[in-house]
Image (tube, rainbow over all chains, first blue to last red; front, side, top):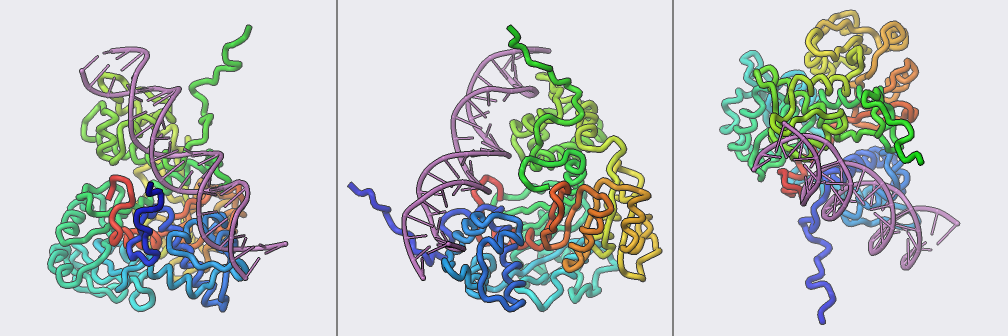
Length: 229
Length: 229
DNA sequence: ATATGTGAACCCATTCACAGCG
DNA sequence: CGCTGTGAATGGGTTCACATAT
C-alpha cells in the first residue's frame, strides 16, 4: 500500500505550492524593510525574535512566515541578512521589478508619486493619468501625466503589474473598467467604494475613511481583545 | 431556586459587553456608507443580502455584524434604513462626533484635509501641524496649520479623539510620543514604521507601500484561496 | 544552552443551517 | 414562503511546545 507522498514537490518550485495568505505577504514585505535597514546599518545576521520585536509580532510568527520563502536560518547566528533579503526579493517581486500605473494625480496620487520617486527601489510608477487639463502634459515627481482616455493606448505600449486608483469615488468603477480592459491584473483601490471586477483581477482596498472610523471607535472602546492597544 | 440571570444587562448598555473585532467595525462603517447612499436615493428599507452584494460580503456576515449594534430587522421588509443608520451612528461615533488632529501636511495630509473638509460629516480635523515654516500659519482646506512644537499646547485647549500621523518615517515615533504625551488615545499611523506606544493607546497602521507590494504579489500569484480576486 | 523548523493545539472569524416570525 | 437572528460547525491563522542542530 502506497502511503508515501505521491510526488515530493521540488523545493525550488518557482510557484509556491500552497497559497500564501495576504497577512503573511504583508508581514514578509515589512520584514524586508526591517532587514534592509539592518543591512545598511552594517549588521550581517539577525534573530527571529529581533525581527519580531521591531514588527511587533512573535518570533514564532516570523519563523512561520519565513517558511513560505524557503528558510535558511542558523541555530547559532540566526538569519544571514543578505541571503534572506535575496530570498525575499525573489519571493515578493516580479523578476523585472514592479511596474505601476497611477490614475488620479490629486493629493493622494502625488503622495504616491513622491513615495516611489523614480530611481531607488525596484518598484516604479511608469505612467500617471488624470482628467484635469491643468495637470495633463505636466511632469509631476518626474512622471508625465497623460489624459485618462489614453489608458488603453499607453498601457498597451508599457504594460504594468499593478494600477493604483486614486480618483474620487464616483469615477473609480469606470477607471477600474478601463484598467481591466487594458489588461491590468491587480489593482490598489484607494477610493471609498468596492469595485466590480472579473475574478481574474486582484483588488486590494485601502480605505482611509474607514481606518479613521476604526481608530475613533477604539479610542472609546479601548482594547479589541488582543494584547495590542 | 434562582436560575434566572443575576442581573439582566440593559439592552441600552452604552459599552458593548463583548469586544468587537476590528474587521467587524470596519464593515459596519462601510455598511453605514451604503445605507447613507440608499437613504439619500429615497429607499426606506433594505435586505441583508442587498447590503452584502454591494460590500461583497455574504448576507450571513452582514446579519452577524449587525448583531453587535442591536438589530431591528423585519422578516418581510428587511431593515428600516433610517433606524439602522441611527443605531450605527450611536454605535460607531462618539456622542460629540469625532474630533481629529493631523500631523504632517504633505500630500497625504492634504488629501485627508480635503476628504474631511469641514462642515459635512460628524468627523472633522480640528487641528493640523507641520514643521515646514512655509506651511505654518497658513490655512489649508480651511484648517489652520500650527508648528509641531505646539502639539501639547493646542491639544490641551482643543482635545481630539484621534490623531493622524502623516509625517516621514524618521519623525513618526517622535510625533507619536508628543501626541501620547498630549493625551491622545488613538492614532492612525500612515508612516511605514511601527510605533512604540503605551498599551493604553490604540494604533491603526495603514501602510500604502505594503499595500502595493501585496497587490504586486497577487498580480503574479493569482488567487489567495478565497473566492475574491 | 539557545535558536530554528514545524506538527499539533488553540482560537477566532466566517459560514452553515435552521428555528422563529411576519 | 422568505428573511431575520443565532447556535453549531467549519476553516484558517496564530501560538505552543518540542525535536533538532550547533
